[in-house]
Length: 634
Ligand code: PRX
Image (cartoon, rainbow, N blue to C red; front, side, top):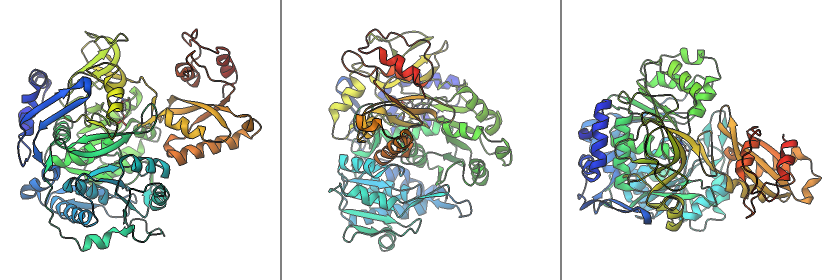
């Protein structure tokens, strides 16, 4: 990857121009630095109107050879993963590349012995413990497709994800630690599996020592199987375009979308962006605080860092446990050099005393990162002043589950940063802003819908089992272009600032939540007739959820406080606690267009207490409900 390393702004412009002028040559030069069983015949084949893209056509490789095996000669004793447990009194674990090789091979052999074959889907529902990293990589080694489900999702959300891609196996643990709570993961899996006939085996890691039930013939403890497994395992020969993983993301309508990522393009892109954006060097210690259950963890805890032979930190806990100094204690303890987190965490910590930060030595830090939602100016400055001591560039990285890797972001030490701006597209990324008439908006100081007009290697290839939905969601609003669902502005020098979603997805604490599935969950409550969910600004979470709910006659006489609790309980059970509503207003009607569509724009304004200018309401079927809702606002 050395050929296109970026160390200065001047070099960035040079490299960027080359990546646009000759994208095939650009990416194939980068791809040369990886280990292949057989090189590709053609770098790129695509038809964006059809949502069809292939990179490194007919190339053969295995991603674990690139993330583990090839480092062994030079970096066998180097730490690959530092595991920092939830409890600060439990010792951290340093897993070297040699250890990782042995553990992944053993796990790969267990998977094979338990009947998992190339192409099978394996659901991983684990807390942030080393076994999570090991099983993900073991799947990749044998060519099974991993589908990691964040261990905060409920049984029915887990079941929907297992059913959608028909997983053959689930890997879970007896439970998980998160701050002062323990979560009964195995019990949740048991509930989920009542409706998942495809699952034949469940492998269970011991973590909390909770008392759990094991179903005979289906459930097995993992440890004894690993003990007996060989620590050598041949890596499967995979095609560049074979699936690597499925990761579910919320849609603005209907059920979650299983985004499918394929091997070679994803590997090359996450490796290249990791190295450059964070300016990773051999002795650095990189810490991304995300959970591997999200794309950030896939790409920048595991694949990107490991493909570079880096040392990456895996943290089981939360920023507030046992106190608000935990993040900074861990930075100090492991001498972290690059720290990558979400604005919601920064905002929560910025509310606390700065003594929590100054107590620790953060002088190892070189680069800070932000991801998941727009970072507001106040949080940016707090991060810059107190954590970075005004000497660490902040890379505000804009990207998505669908994009696989960072798309618009400063490159540390090269791109001058500007608070709240993701700044410039990375090499190979060609963003455009589109107007309402589907025309590309030229020039600077403009606002529009953010699209990408040329393929990049890590883009998702499809939605599992539903290519039509993939095409409709991402490639039909602006034919021939990938539509991100975000709005953006481009300032006078060409810097991008992401202004937020333009669809019905709300980003709560950095989590992407579709409003439709939450409404579906609420509407199942026997007292609810109809509901509409919108986001509204929240000091710490960025956005929180506001529910406007119409009750059936049967609900009219019920105690509202109890109903509110019950509705949130429904949401917790169907989706997970992250999707609970912060505010509920019971209403008599919802503003609708003549075609019956709820006008969320108006509800968003009411929820944000910004009712001075509601815009055009002339197309409403029932304008009187708007006044009624405003008058009775909670
Ligand atoms: O709205 C954008 C927001 O998060 C969405 C993608 O969410 P998800 O697929 O869960 O991936 C999150 C982690 C990559 C985007 O459409 N978003 C992400 N990063 C930023 C952001 N908004 C503003 N600034 C960012 N840096």
